[in-house]
Length: 423
Image (cartoon, rainbow, N blue to C red; front, side):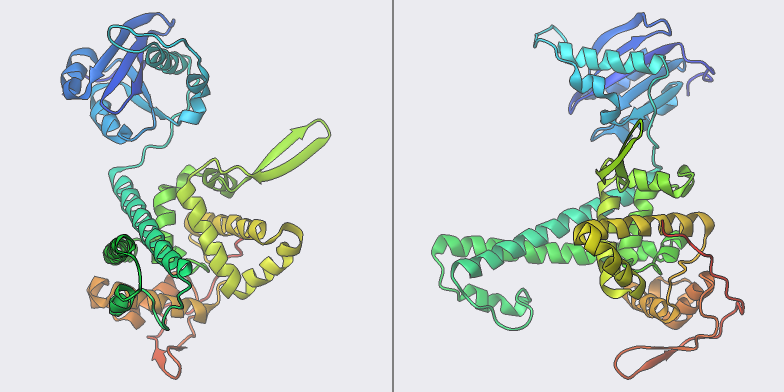
């Protein structure tokens, strides 16, 4: 364990991180170089940190593949570690130097480390939020599911393309059900094309197996998170969608208002405001792509299924076109997310029976064994409705074509739904 850290750092060290090594350069508060550029292979990183770094060092590095591992290793040894988003340090990418060979590291790498160190010394860098370990792991799980989803989609597209090339009509039902393998194998294809088809078929069913496993785990995590359970009642949101939103946002208190959250997702519009001229453009897309994508998907579902959002799409589409109208609805849903999480309130357009059916469907997806105290699905639904202050007088919900499910009595007789703005 190192000595107690001082309040004011004495050295400012910039790290230009690569796959197998990093370049380190340090300056003092007067921008004098106090740590000449050094190339450090990751195989000897531990030894370098023990010999070189002190509790009086402030370190800065850009966000890259192995940033969080470096952050965890550096933090106990130094005064502070600042992680910056690469576009925020445009000077690095815009620096143009003549390629040159040096004994230990490239000129461009030294310039990058030097710029980071000097900007940090002058207080010109704003660090990004460092997510805790559980958020990092959840984001990795969600990213893995997205990759597997793309794999399944690509395999299906290639299999469809085979049918289109040969003008073949598919059989009725699920074209990709395992029972259809004999039909696919009997197609009159050349030997090489048959190999490709078999590969795509196996890729698809591998991906579907992995998707089932990942989705099941995500639903199990979702039922344990009160934030997720609050978000599920929103139109277009399921367990996976709500968990993705929560993982992307992290700590909601980071956002002082809904506009900051909209900007974080890249759903805010570009604005040119000069003199008497004000123009707005397309959305910035300068934010978390996963959050933006999942909100657009939720907006598509909401606009197709929920009466309020159907009407909103009908109002916006003639003026904006469908795609822009969906993006506008996604932004409005994200504003609602901020209010639901920050004020622990309920969407003012929530339809109690629709919400109850959605919660019941989610309960069966998750499975009874994952509820606390062996709750029944009906008890889970009532508990969540009470949490949302919804429908204390709802005693049964339609389930299936003719069946009804009875709900336990509410423990909260009052109903108080906040007026959540959608701006």
